Amino acid sequence: MNKLNLELLTSSSLNTDEEFYTYLSFINECLIDKELTHKEYKQCYFKNCDFNDVKFDHCYFISCYFENCDLSNIEFNSTLLRGCQFVNCKMMGTSFYECLLESTSFKESHMQFAGISLNTIKSSEFIRCNLKQSSFVDTKIMKMKMIECNLMEAEFSSTSLYGIDLSTCEIAGIMIALKDIKGTIINELQSSDLIHLLEVKIKH
Image (cartoon, rainbow, N blue to C red; front, side, top):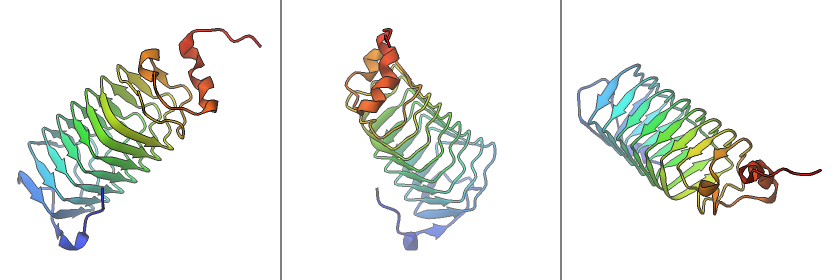
């Protein structure tokens, strides 16, 4: 997941009818309330872009880099994200529905209320992201890292975290079934955040 070589990219605009975008950079672009269908972006760099309320439907993002972008309330529907990086992006309420997130990285991004439903996550990572009150629903996870993320009041429904290391994350108020938290790696202090799953009473 290396950053793109900007010297190889050509500046362009998203306000075109092209279907394929390759080796392009998009700086300070603004797309509001648009629906983009069957678009393919490969080796593209997005910086300081505003995509508020945009819908990407059946799109492909291959080895793309997003930096300081506002992706709040956008929808990724049936979309492939492979080898992509999101760095310091605003992604409040961003929706990922029936997507494949493969070898994709989210770093220091604000993802409160993000919705990840019916997805497959493979070899991806969330690093120092705010995922408070986000939701992971019916999502299959195959190798994922979560490092120093805020997962307070996040919901994991029919989404197994077996083998996932959450020991550096904030998990107070996390909503998850006992069967889905089985095998998750936590630290000693976090055990008190999960005691309610056992439906026991603690005698003081």
